[in-house]
Image (cartoon, rainbow, N blue to C red; front, side, top):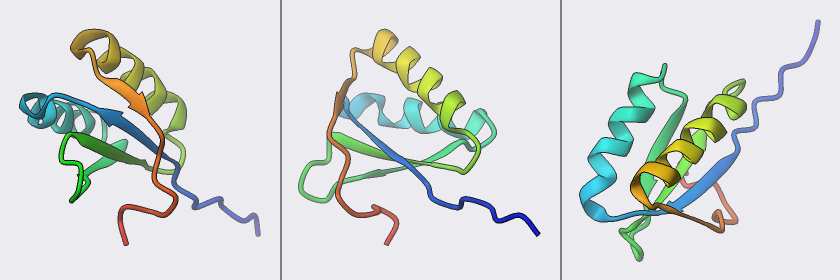
Length: 83
């Protein structure tokens, strides 16, 4: 039986707080390709935990959001934000 890589990459964006709801809607409307969480100490940073098999789609969506909203890619956390 083949093993499945269940690792979930995380990408992070610095966004305007007013755009968080829109970004979450975009993620959910695209087959739930990622789960977004904000950081307690930096509420303008969104950590996007990407579902297995959706990395290419998520990267394309993130690139579009960066272009459309002026979001800025930042370093991802060293541990999963979903703990």
